Image: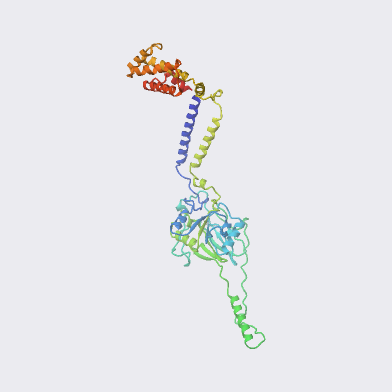
Length: 499
C-alpha cells in the first residue's frame, strides 16, 4: 500500500511540475523580432516581413486567390485548378531548380502570368526576350541587425516614386513608398551576362554569374541594314512572263504574302511603369503568350509597407491584372502540402510539447508497472469450487433417497437454537415454554409457534412426510426467521462475507 501511495504521489508531483514548466514557457515576454536580412515572405506569416495582409485583403475583396503548396509541375496538371497568375515573393527558402524553372517558363509561354517580387530575383525566374533581359541592381542590402518593424530605418532617405506612364499596373496609383533597400531594374542585351554587383551590407549577390568577376561589356546588337539606298526608289517586283488575268492574280497573291511577312511580331521590349532618377522599380514584358511582371522591392507588398502611400493599390494591380485564379507560391516558401497539417496548426504552441511529455509519462507508468518494488509474494490461490456445491450435492442425495425428514431436521435444528437465543432460554426446554417465551417477546401467538414446532419434531421422529409437506414446513420456518429477524448470526454473516 505504501508503494502504491508513493507512486501516485510521485506522478501527481510530476504532473504539477510539468504544468508549471509549460505555463512558464508559454508566457513569453516578447517574440523575437523579424530581421530584414532573413525575411519570411509567406502569406501565412503575420509578422513584419510576411504577406498575409495582402492575401487577406484579396480574399476579403472577393478575388480568387489560393496558397499554392504543390510543385510547379502541378501548374499544368489537369487534376488541379490551373491558375492564371502565379506570384513569387521574396527570397525563397526552397530555391527553384533548373527543371522547375523550365516548367515555369513553359507555363508562362503558354499564356500564364508570372509576378516576381524581389530585390535580387533569381535569373531562372526571368526568361529573357529575343532582344533584352532584365536584372536588378541593388545599392545596399540590409544588414543582419536591421529589424523589419523599424520603418524609420527601412525608409530613411527615400522619396516617393511616381508612375512614368498610365498603364494597367499604375491605375489609381499616384506614388509608392519604397524602402532604401529597393533594387533598380536594368536592361542588358539578350545572351550577355549581367554585370557583377557591388553591394554594401550583408546580403546575396543579384548577379547571374557566381564568379563575381567583371565581364567585358558586350557590343551592341548590329543595326538592320536598309533594303535600299536612301533617296533611291525600291525596285518593283518582277512580273513573271505571261498575259491576261493569270499573271495579274499571281502578282497580287505574292504582294499580299510579302505584306503579311513584313508585319513586325508583337514587341517583347520591357515596359517600365514606375521609375525615378536611380532606375525603374516596376517592369513587365511579354514571353510567348504570357507576361512577366517584376517588382524590385518586396517592401511594397509586405505587411510592414503595404499600407504606405499607394503600395497596396500597386500590389493589387500587379497580381489581379490578369484573368483567372491568383496563386501565391508557398511550396518554395517551405510550406509544401506534404507537411503534417496537424503539426503545422499547432506549431509555435506548447501543445506539441505537452503531447510529448504526456507520452513520456505514459511510457514511464507502463515501465514502472512491469517492475517489482518489494519482495516477491506468492500468487493468490483461488478456490474454484462453487459455494453451493455442497448444498446442491446434499439436496440431490436427500431428494433421491426421499429423506425429507433429514432436510427438515437440518433447518429446524438451526431455527430452534435461534429461537432459544431470542427467547432467552436454554436449548433443552420444552417447546411449550419456548413458544411462550418467544411469543411474549415478539407478540406472536404461542399456539401457532408450538404447532409448527410439533409438526417439525414429528417429521423428524419418523412420521410419514411428503415432499410438498417438507417444503411447506421449511418455508414456514424461513418466514418465522425473517419475521423475528433471526435469519443469521453475526459470526455466520462474517463467514459468508469471507466466502
